[in-house]
Image (cartoon, rainbow, N blue to C red; front, side):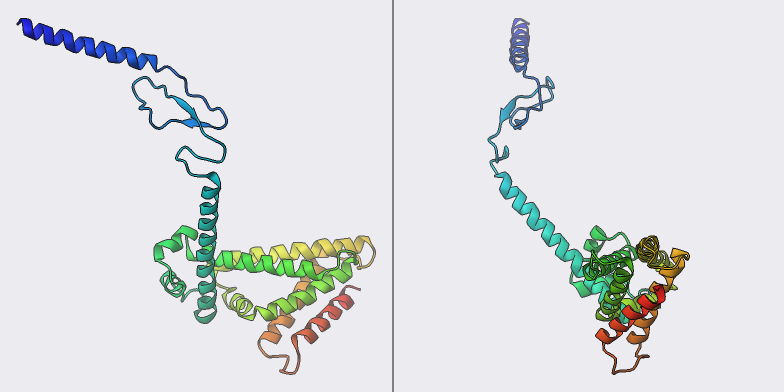
Length: 266
């Protein structure tokens, strides 16, 4: 009986001593710049942790921050390369087989990546197609901007942009031929309509600028813009399908369209 009481008292003393030691660790967690939580401190008893300072340029694991940044950049670049592989493979397959006949598995096989990786970048096949269209649209707009003299009048800039568009469409004939075929597909129609609206807005702004300068007749700007876009699209489509003969070069066609647009807006 006596030994049992002694064991009970001894255990109680040890518990109280441990509790007093834990209470002594009473440093509040703060968020001072350049400091982090010390992972060596076990939390859960008092809800309070110690704080240690870390030298600038180094993490609490002793890894230099510039090394982490380099690794993250390499990972990002690798991810961009993988994504571009999928886009390039899809562009070729869409042009060869059409959008509907191309499966996600086909794209992954052609790109040499696992199917699971596809869904890391694109939730659906239509999302990938939208990315292709938007990327090409951005490239076309950059090409147009580079071709247009920022100091020239609105009519000159519109005609320069039209000529640059004809050349760009000829250089990327497979993509624009695909758009011609897929334009009626409900799965991608909204994506293509969105692109058409962007081009229309661009030309409308320039037409209205020309009208304010009294270089372009007073008419509905959207009608004139549609005429410009229609000319570029029609001439490019005819050239792509061989309806303009084999002797006409892209440069000659671009020059013709440039003058045609100037005359139409005069």
